[in-house]
Length: 228
Image (cartoon, rainbow, N blue to C red; front, top):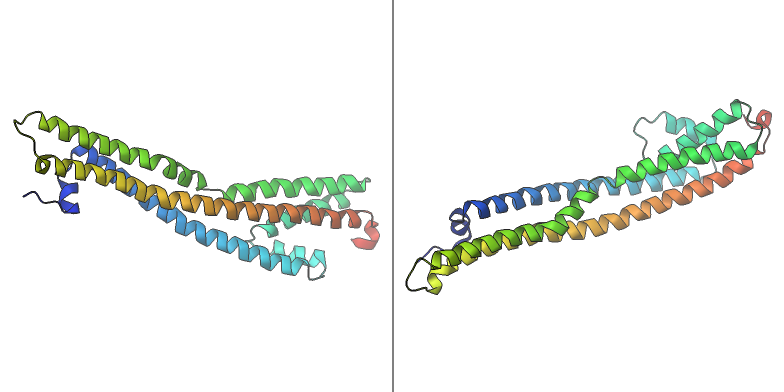
Protein backbone atom coordinates (compact mmCIF):
# COMPACT_ATOMS: atom_id res chain seq x y z
CA UNK A 1 0.00 0.00 0.00
CA UNK A 2 1.37 3.40 -1.01
CA UNK A 3 2.42 5.83 1.70
CA UNK A 4 -0.13 8.68 1.58
CA UNK A 5 1.42 10.90 4.24
CA UNK A 6 1.91 14.58 3.31
CA UNK A 7 5.70 14.38 3.59
CA UNK A 8 5.85 11.26 1.45
CA UNK A 9 3.62 12.78 -1.22
CA UNK A 10 5.81 15.89 -1.39
CA UNK A 11 9.05 13.89 -1.52
CA UNK A 12 7.72 11.60 -4.25
CA UNK A 13 6.18 14.36 -6.33
CA UNK A 14 7.60 15.20 -9.74
CA UNK A 15 10.43 17.73 -9.94
CA UNK A 16 8.23 20.43 -11.47
CA UNK A 17 5.53 20.01 -8.83
CA UNK A 18 8.20 20.15 -6.11
CA UNK A 19 9.56 23.39 -7.62
CA UNK A 20 6.04 24.85 -7.61
CA UNK A 21 5.62 23.86 -3.95
CA UNK A 22 9.01 25.36 -3.07
CA UNK A 23 8.15 28.60 -4.85
CA UNK A 24 4.82 28.85 -3.03
CA UNK A 25 6.51 28.13 0.30
CA UNK A 26 9.09 30.87 -0.26
CA UNK A 27 6.40 33.34 -1.36
CA UNK A 28 4.27 32.46 1.66
CA UNK A 29 7.17 33.07 4.05
CA UNK A 30 7.90 36.42 2.37
CA UNK A 31 4.24 37.41 2.57
CA UNK A 32 4.00 36.59 6.28
CA UNK A 33 7.22 38.51 6.93
CA UNK A 34 5.75 41.55 5.21
CA UNK A 35 2.45 41.14 7.07
CA UNK A 36 4.09 41.20 10.51
CA UNK A 37 6.37 44.06 9.50
CA UNK A 38 3.47 46.07 8.09
CA UNK A 39 1.39 45.54 11.21
CA UNK A 40 4.18 47.08 13.26
CA UNK A 41 4.73 49.99 10.86
CA UNK A 42 1.07 50.95 10.63
CA UNK A 43 0.55 50.64 14.36
CA UNK A 44 3.51 52.97 14.95
CA UNK A 45 2.20 55.39 12.33
CA UNK A 46 -1.19 55.61 14.06
CA UNK A 47 0.43 56.16 17.46
CA UNK A 48 2.74 58.87 16.05
CA UNK A 49 -0.20 60.61 14.40
CA UNK A 50 -2.27 60.66 17.60
CA UNK A 51 0.70 61.84 19.65
CA UNK A 52 1.54 64.69 17.27
CA UNK A 53 -2.08 65.82 16.91
CA UNK A 54 -2.35 66.03 20.70
CA UNK A 55 0.70 68.31 20.79
CA UNK A 56 -0.37 70.34 17.78
CA UNK A 57 -3.86 71.08 19.04
CA UNK A 58 -2.77 71.69 22.63
CA UNK A 59 -2.58 75.39 21.92
CA UNK A 60 1.18 75.70 22.25
CA UNK A 61 3.43 77.91 20.18
CA UNK A 62 3.92 76.52 16.66
CA UNK A 63 7.47 77.84 16.45
CA UNK A 64 8.42 75.91 19.58
CA UNK A 65 6.70 72.80 18.26
CA UNK A 66 8.66 73.20 15.04
CA UNK A 67 11.91 73.34 16.99
CA UNK A 68 10.98 70.16 18.85
CA UNK A 69 10.09 68.34 15.65
CA UNK A 70 13.22 69.55 13.87
CA UNK A 71 15.40 68.20 16.65
CA UNK A 72 13.84 64.74 16.23
CA UNK A 73 15.83 62.89 13.58
CA UNK A 74 13.27 60.05 13.56
CA UNK A 75 10.19 62.17 12.82
CA UNK A 76 7.53 60.47 10.72
CA UNK A 77 4.10 61.06 9.27
CA UNK A 78 2.43 64.27 10.41
CA UNK A 79 5.62 65.51 12.03
CA UNK A 80 7.41 65.50 8.67
CA UNK A 81 4.45 67.12 6.92
CA UNK A 82 4.22 69.84 9.56
CA UNK A 83 7.98 70.40 9.52
CA UNK A 84 8.06 70.73 5.72
CA UNK A 85 5.16 73.18 5.67
CA UNK A 86 6.28 75.39 8.54
CA UNK A 87 9.87 75.44 7.28
CA UNK A 88 8.74 76.67 3.87
CA UNK A 89 6.40 79.18 5.53
CA UNK A 90 9.24 80.65 7.62
CA UNK A 91 11.63 80.73 4.66
CA UNK A 92 9.23 82.62 2.41
CA UNK A 93 8.39 85.08 5.19
CA UNK A 94 12.04 85.76 5.87
CA UNK A 95 12.69 86.28 2.16
CA UNK A 96 10.13 89.07 2.27
CA UNK A 97 7.51 87.50 0.03
CA UNK A 98 4.95 90.34 -0.30
CA UNK A 99 1.93 88.20 -1.11
CA UNK A 100 0.52 86.34 1.93
CA UNK A 101 -1.26 83.82 -0.31
CA UNK A 102 1.99 83.06 -2.12
CA UNK A 103 3.56 82.21 1.23
CA UNK A 104 0.65 79.95 2.16
CA UNK A 105 0.59 78.25 -1.23
CA UNK A 106 4.32 77.59 -1.02
CA UNK A 107 3.93 75.99 2.39
CA UNK A 108 0.97 73.95 1.15
CA UNK A 109 2.94 72.67 -1.84
CA UNK A 110 5.76 71.61 0.45
CA UNK A 111 3.31 69.72 2.65
CA UNK A 112 1.68 68.03 -0.34
CA UNK A 113 5.04 66.82 -1.59
CA UNK A 114 5.89 65.40 1.82
CA UNK A 115 2.41 63.87 2.14
CA UNK A 116 2.87 62.02 -1.16
CA UNK A 117 6.22 60.68 0.01
CA UNK A 118 4.69 59.52 3.28
CA UNK A 119 1.89 57.82 1.34
CA UNK A 120 4.44 56.04 -0.86
CA UNK A 121 6.29 54.90 2.26
CA UNK A 122 3.11 53.49 3.81
CA UNK A 123 2.20 51.65 0.60
CA UNK A 124 5.56 49.86 0.30
CA UNK A 125 5.13 46.08 -0.16
CA UNK A 126 1.35 46.28 -0.59
CA UNK A 127 1.83 45.55 -4.28
CA UNK A 128 3.69 42.36 -3.44
CA UNK A 129 0.84 41.16 -1.22
CA UNK A 130 -1.64 41.94 -3.98
CA UNK A 131 0.44 39.97 -6.48
CA UNK A 132 0.76 36.99 -4.14
CA UNK A 133 -2.96 37.02 -3.47
CA UNK A 134 -3.89 37.11 -7.14
CA UNK A 135 -1.30 34.75 -8.64
CA UNK A 136 -0.56 32.09 -6.01
CA UNK A 137 -3.78 30.08 -6.63
CA UNK A 138 -2.94 29.91 -10.33
CA UNK A 139 0.64 28.83 -9.64
CA UNK A 140 -0.69 26.10 -7.35
CA UNK A 141 -3.24 25.13 -9.98
CA UNK A 142 -0.48 24.82 -12.55
CA UNK A 143 1.33 22.37 -10.28
CA UNK A 144 -1.90 20.45 -9.77
CA UNK A 145 -2.64 20.21 -13.50
CA UNK A 146 0.90 19.06 -14.19
CA UNK A 147 0.77 16.41 -11.48
CA UNK A 148 -2.61 15.07 -12.60
CA UNK A 149 -1.44 15.01 -16.20
CA UNK A 150 1.57 12.91 -15.22
CA UNK A 151 -0.71 10.55 -13.30
CA UNK A 152 -2.92 9.95 -16.32
CA UNK A 153 0.07 9.55 -18.60
CA UNK A 154 1.34 6.84 -16.28
CA UNK A 155 -2.00 5.04 -16.57
CA UNK A 156 -1.47 4.70 -20.29
CA UNK A 157 1.42 2.32 -19.68
CA UNK A 158 -0.55 -0.22 -17.66
CA UNK A 159 -3.12 -2.80 -18.71
CA UNK A 160 -5.48 -2.30 -15.81
CA UNK A 161 -5.89 1.04 -14.00
CA UNK A 162 -6.89 1.16 -10.35
CA UNK A 163 -7.64 3.98 -7.93
CA UNK A 164 -4.64 2.97 -5.84
CA UNK A 165 -2.36 3.67 -8.80
CA UNK A 166 -3.67 7.14 -9.58
CA UNK A 167 -4.51 8.33 -6.06
CA UNK A 168 -0.95 9.24 -4.94
CA UNK A 169 -0.30 11.31 -8.06
CA UNK A 170 -3.56 13.20 -7.74
CA UNK A 171 -3.05 13.72 -4.00
CA UNK A 172 0.45 15.15 -4.44
CA UNK A 173 -0.86 17.41 -7.19
CA UNK A 174 -3.65 18.74 -4.99
CA UNK A 175 -1.09 19.68 -2.34
CA UNK A 176 0.18 22.34 -4.76
CA UNK A 177 -3.31 23.86 -4.93
CA UNK A 178 -3.59 23.80 -1.15
CA UNK A 179 -0.23 25.57 -0.82
CA UNK A 180 -1.30 28.15 -3.37
CA UNK A 181 -4.40 28.92 -1.33
CA UNK A 182 -2.35 28.94 1.88
CA UNK A 183 -0.15 31.65 0.37
CA UNK A 184 -2.95 33.61 -1.28
CA UNK A 185 -5.64 33.84 1.42
CA UNK A 186 -3.56 35.59 4.13
CA UNK A 187 -2.04 37.88 1.50
CA UNK A 188 -5.47 38.97 0.22
CA UNK A 189 -6.87 39.50 3.73
CA UNK A 190 -3.78 41.44 4.81
CA UNK A 191 -3.75 43.54 1.64
CA UNK A 192 -7.37 44.60 2.09
CA UNK A 193 -6.79 45.40 5.76
CA UNK A 194 -3.59 47.34 5.15
CA UNK A 195 -5.05 49.22 2.18
CA UNK A 196 -7.91 50.43 4.37
CA UNK A 197 -5.53 51.44 7.17
CA UNK A 198 -3.23 53.30 4.77
CA UNK A 199 -6.15 55.16 3.18
CA UNK A 200 -7.35 56.23 6.63
CA UNK A 201 -3.91 57.52 7.55
CA UNK A 202 -3.56 59.40 4.27
CA UNK A 203 -7.02 60.90 4.78
CA UNK A 204 -5.95 62.11 8.24
CA UNK A 205 -2.77 63.57 6.75
CA UNK A 206 -4.76 65.30 4.02
CA UNK A 207 -7.17 66.80 6.54
CA UNK A 208 -4.25 68.03 8.61
CA UNK A 209 -2.75 69.78 5.59
CA UNK A 210 -6.04 71.61 5.00
CA UNK A 211 -6.39 72.55 8.67
CA UNK A 212 -2.78 73.69 9.00
CA UNK A 213 -3.10 75.67 5.78
CA UNK A 214 -6.03 77.57 7.31
CA UNK A 215 -3.89 78.40 10.35
CA UNK A 216 -1.04 79.58 8.13
CA UNK A 217 -3.43 81.77 6.16
CA UNK A 218 -4.24 83.66 9.33
CA UNK A 219 -0.60 83.94 10.33
CA UNK A 220 0.43 85.05 6.84
CA UNK A 221 -1.53 88.27 7.27
CA UNK A 222 0.27 89.03 10.53
CA UNK A 223 3.19 91.46 10.03
CA UNK A 224 6.57 89.77 10.28
CA UNK A 225 7.65 92.15 13.02
CA UNK A 226 4.76 90.97 15.19
CA UNK A 227 5.12 87.26 14.53
CA UNK A 228 8.75 86.51 13.79
